Image (tube, one colour):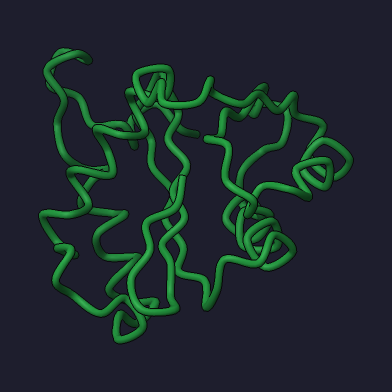
Amino acid sequence: MTCAKLSSYLITAVDRRSRYTLIRRVRNKQSGRVMEGILKMFEDIDPSIIKTMTFDNGNEFYYHRMLTEQLGVKVYFADPYKSGQRGTNENTNGLIRQFFPKTMTYAMINPQAVRRVQDLLNDRPRKTHGYKPPSAFIG
């Protein structure tokens, strides 16, 4: 769920069914900061539609209980070295790298650029949905 680059990180959340994507930049990988970033990502999302979240086993998810307490979601962790258990998220991270390649310093990315990429991905038609974009499924 995170992509690192020079003391700044992108956190991503992807709905497995609709492929709707949320992206936020955080300054560091401290668990409290990452959890605050995730909670801010979901401020405008109806909490009743968020059922589960699956993370890798990074230390940045130590305070995952904050999500259960504040959003009421079940949190799961992928098995070590089993990125395929989070395939939709890994694929989406690859799409994000088209806009923010590994050579880019994430600290230089402004929130408007992150939002622009998020909107582009959510408005991109997907074959799996009969060429409707993910944004068509989020009310």
